[in-house]
Image 1 (cartoon, rainbow, N blue to C red):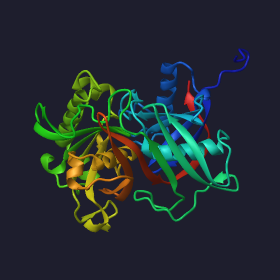
Image 2 (image 1 turned 90 degrees about the vertical axis):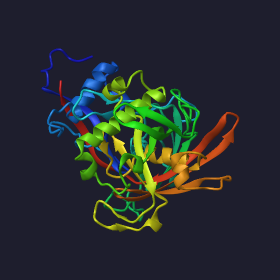
Image 3 (image 1 turned 120 degrees about the vertical axis):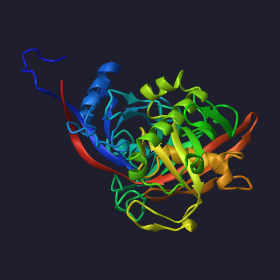
Length: 391
């Protein structure tokens, strides 16, 4: 209970850690340090990141004014016997008072294990520490294998991740049973590919996949694109962005994730993701470096919170890898595979370079099931202390 005789501070001080995971950054909190009331909690988180900001800069908060840097993570000890920590992810809108909890962030998942170890939630095992994570947004288990030295997560190493300028230590993530969720099965409509009519756009072939996060895949050529586009080209075309959002919102309704396209656009900006794919080809990444077609199996671009992601989302990569292993999908058509057992790896050519991710898809009574997906990311604690929030 607060002391009524103590002078009221102008700002509330909340313990927090700023972390990079993969190609994203987010502010990590212990759930117990936040208000128990969800509305009060979200109001505090929005203010901490500087949202909503009509100028789009999050200048009065910790958000970085991009979809990759406007994120929060809530961590708590897990009550599940098969998990160590519960991980809740929130994608914070920059311009609107909205935190979307409908999906996971695969990139920041890489930072959950190191955070849990450094915060004493998981006992460090020298060499390699396994952290069992319950992803509360989508109700899935994830195993993170974190390299440890002298009781602390290792941050230096020779693992390079395109989109991150310095090498680091690889954190291996195993997404267990990543296909499907409480909202929708692996194939929400039961079809690997189908035609959907979007008002103002026309009829498009789409593959609707629910793995990692719900994701809509379309062919780049059907959008008038070639798969090589960079952020300036896509984000600088308001008419194209509007068309892409129409497609995303209508497909969300088709997937059973919203009542109307308008409701999806308003309240569910984070998921489903929309990605477009194209055959492998030579291109230049965002640094101007040449990426030969031989380095990747296909080209792909993905939207995040209405803008082109500067690399490729982690959960989008999981969905793409699952789709690549599923016969009949648009992704599978670009990366033909004779099938078989084990993890199938696919190399994704994205704006910042190439990302490799693997998935194992096996036949099931009702069609197919995704057994697991595997990828590697690096992560690092950037700052620790207290977030100050006017309150």
